[in-house]
Length: 119
Image (cartoon, rainbow, N blue to C red):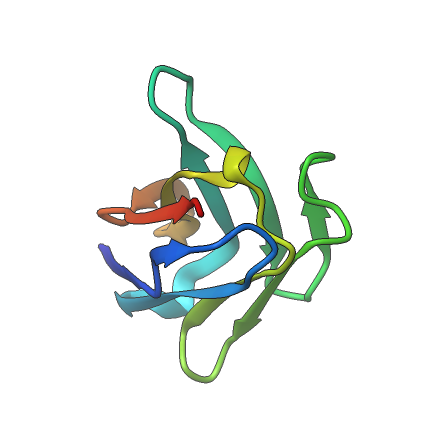
């Protein structure tokens, strides 16, 4: 099992920045890929960014050049640095991980953290 706790959300003005964190515990050493998803009101959950254990990253087109995903494997923590925030970035942001436990892939979700971009 892997437990995930997100933090760092809040209210920010357009053009501002926030950094989200996601602390993993439990069998965190089994984590292979870490993701950030988001879900805006009335919309489906969408993938924002991902990072492998080796540091390879991918981003949604809507956040490329503005968001940076990173991870500290020693601390089992995932980050999302969000710059030049726009109102359309308003959503609940969720941490998600792919963990391989006893050779089986498992996905785990955090509880989510609200990000609101508004003047």
